[in-house]
Length: 180
Image (cartoon, rainbow, N blue to C red; front, side, top):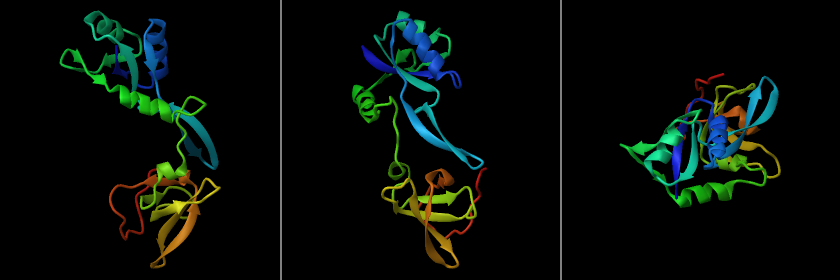
C-alpha cells in the first residue's frame, strides 16, 4: 500500500475525502489555519494545505484506480500515463508531524514572513508601500517591517494579515500595486 495524490473538483476536497472514506480508503486531507481580513474584521479559516488535492493510501491496482476516479468530487488520481505516481511516505509523515492538536497546521508569523522577506502593505494608511521584514515581534502576533518612508527605512509593527509577500530580493521601491 502506498500514498497517492488525488486531484479533486474545485472546492470539493472535504466532500471527496468523505466519499473516499465511505468506500473504505484511508484518506489524508492536510489543512492549514489562515487569517483573513474583511473590512476591519479578522477571522481564522481552516483551508486545505494543497487546494484541489488530497492523499489516499491504496494498492495501485487498476480496479482501485477506477474506483477512486469514479468517486463523486474526484477529478482523477495523479498518474504518469496509466501508472499512479506514489507520494513518498516521508512527505506524508512530515506533514502529519506539523499538524497540531486541533488537526491542522497553524503557522506563526515567523513561518509566513521570515526576516529579509520583501512585503507590500495591503491595508491601512501605509497600503501600497513596500518594505522588508526585519523580525517577528516577541509575544505579539505582529511583524516588524522596515518601510521606505521619507528617504529612509522606518520600522513599523504590522499585522501579518495586512501584508503580501513579494518575490525577489529587497529593493528600493516605494509603491506597489496591491490587490484588494
